[in-house]
Amino acid sequence: MTFEELLLEVDGFGKYQMLVYLMLCLPRLVIPMHFLLHNFISASPSHHCIIPDFPGTSNLSQDEIFLISLPREADGTWSSCKMFSRPQYHLLVNSSEEMDNISSIQSCQRGWVYDHSQYVSTTATEWDLVCEKKGLNQAIATFFFIGVTLGSVLFGYLSDRFGRRRILLLAIAVTLFFGTMTAFSVSYLMFIVMRSLCGVGLTGISIISLTLAVEWTDIKHRTFCGTISGLSWSVGYMLLALLAYLIRSWRWLLIAVTSPCLLSIVLWWWLPESVRWLLTKKEVETAHSYLSRCATVNGKKDFHSKITTEVLNKAVIMNESRNYFYWHLLKTSILRKITLCSTIVWFGVAFSYYGITLNITGFSLDPYMTQFMFGAIEIPAKVCVYFVLDRIGRRHCQAWTLIGTGFFIALNASIPAEHGHVRSAVAILGKGFSEASFTTVFLYTAELYPTVLRQSGIGCCSFVARVASSLAPLIMLLDDTWQYLPSIIFSTVAGMSGIVAFLLPETTNRQLPETVEHLEGDRNENILETKTSQESMHAEISLEIMSPVSTDVRLSQQQEGNSDCDMKLSLENSWLANGMDTSGS
Figure (cartoon, rainbow, N blue to C red):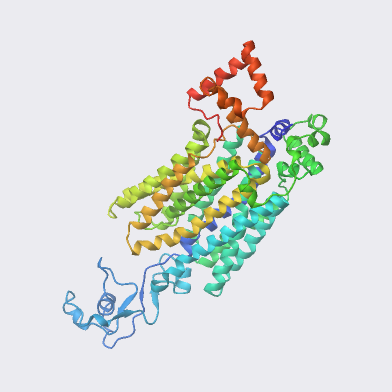
């Protein structure tokens, strides 16, 4: 008996599964609020050099003091990072007159004055991370995603080794502790260390909660649940905009977005372990108790009479219980192909997503409204993904959403800055495509790997995605070299990774593989069926890949004119004619 059949006995998608999903949604709310927090806690408000009290300036207006103290940029605005070493009084008579000496321009000597009308305090104002130090401020996001990168590897392995449920609690506790400690940082160094360790815990919540949800869902509702689960990210996205609008101090904002972890720890006590994982570890009694609880909540009263521990012992997935490590992701040819292509796709998804998400300035909307709109567009994007995934398949959905993301990034860069409303609309469309690709990649990857390696596979891909996330903030600094360079890089990477997605096998409406042998077996079976459907053209090749027993049976069926075989060939030809993939590779 396969696990899919076991799920049907307890109702593959009943009240119990819905409760599990709802409980997992709360910790998932914390993830986007922390991942996108950089937009607000590290925002760089308008600033200028502290102007010393030059003699004879007491009767001058603010604009006149700026005129004699600060040089202008090319666009006519006051310089944020430069000042005159001595006042240029002659500019009061003729403001268009050149300064007396170019060497009189110098960097700020006494610090900066910040505009606090929008942000009461940020990391930039706390430690003066502006001008020559603005790279350190942008690097805060990079250090955070480095922690997220390490967490994807650590928690991916731990959850496959010790179980989803226990390691999820560890991830929530790590996030709560280090998220709170970050808010009490007294130095830049302490801040980036605490923030990075908080990122380690957050990625554990991200990959484990999704895997736990998918492994409790049957084939029919997997797309629905994977999409709905992603809505919690969008809600957290928009909730961050509201919290940032209400809380303008970076320390209190950090505490606010971390506090839901307390309630998540309370809800954890009612979360079940993944029965799929328990069966691979031969923990039959525990698995049976969770299935019994699920059957009771879902109203399946005949479960105990039909499914006993003896029946579970005969489940197909029980034939493999050894420990797996990351190097097993490259053990077989199909796993190597899946891992290589998936990591490239994940890099493109995360790189382009954060290339858009971490840039909320330069549009016609204020940062809070831009953040809210970027989150709001994700909801229709996820709904569209839900209706499209089962119709065109995971592979095509993944590829075309990435290609679309790259197109809109390039299009937005080509629109002049004065057309702010048009740029905002194009950026929001690009954000929608980017979110659609992110929603797809989590579900798609969970379906590609077998249960014994699923969390490790997602952890490996997540590792690569976080490397991409770490690079995205640094790529934005290249706009000082050429304003179009970041957009060209983001759009190119998105388009190329979309093309790579076409190389992955299709998983729509297929059972989740439980072991490596099952994955390879399904591949060989699908190859066998495809070869048979084209037997008239490739008879010799088909005979070489089939076993002697299956060859004799098929030859016998052909000689006897077996109607079942004819019907199967007819169905396969019909699938091929409609463009459906039966090869699985």
